[in-house]
Image (tube, rainbow, N blue to C red; front, side, top):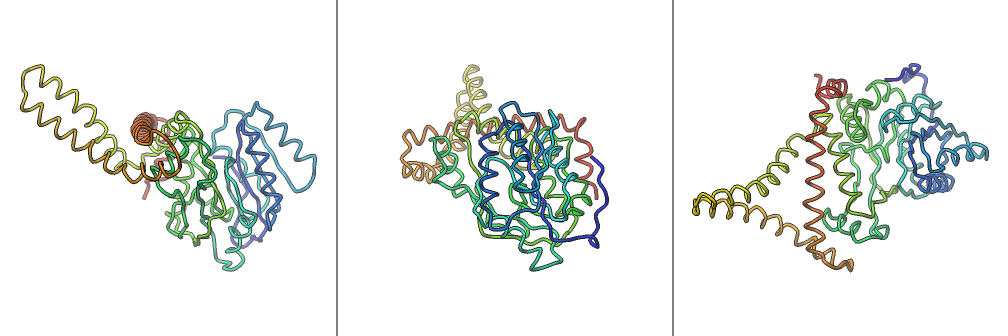
Length: 348
């Protein structure tokens, strides 16, 4: 964890540092700066850490500094993960209020004002959890629509108890320091989930903005969703969170696959009755899964997507398989390489 100067409640002001990270997302950067320039409340400073982009993102950041339209600080650390990038950005930030967001989002002009207003209205506020959502109009491909149909309206209307995701969250800088920052020993994902858990443990004064003004832009292909699921669950495994979810989901998937193999083995040994029982149990599990997909099929058809059943079944199984594979890999890796994160998260 990088060192920073100590910030305290007594030294606070209401100035804002907006922080983010980027890696090979020139289009996302361009959208970000356009959206931030259109905010009804401008940040006092923008701090962005580049992880070693090769697509022109770093050069674009340099060009934004040259424009001198606002205070912009950019840093580059090749190969740094998202948590390290966030920590570097926050350590470099000059102001007391930290607002975090991610590239690959879209923001209404009132987003920054709405997210930071609680610090003015209630000076004792230490953390503000922002809302976010996915807009159907932004879903351009059948696979993006498949995810939306499967998961239902993808939207968080935040409450103080909601999961604070770093695509839309604000906090005082001393809060970040008090919890030890984002966990840098995770490979890539779940750092903001752990950070939120640390905030909850710290019992900071938290409020929420329930209006959705930040929109999460989704992937286009099935392979991108599979990689995202593997990455997210690998981070969760490294941090040793979501263990019950892993046991339930992996256990059911395993049964549906192993059960068929077991039935075939029983048939090979002429244990027909036992094989039939196993197949019936597998069929019940699969049948329940298909029954649960019916509303999603209807939603997907309403969105004009063909092969609705096939797409949903393929998405359901593949993303879960990738996710559980990632979790198992991450959990084992975390035993040796993520001890600091686990200790901070699970210590009394």
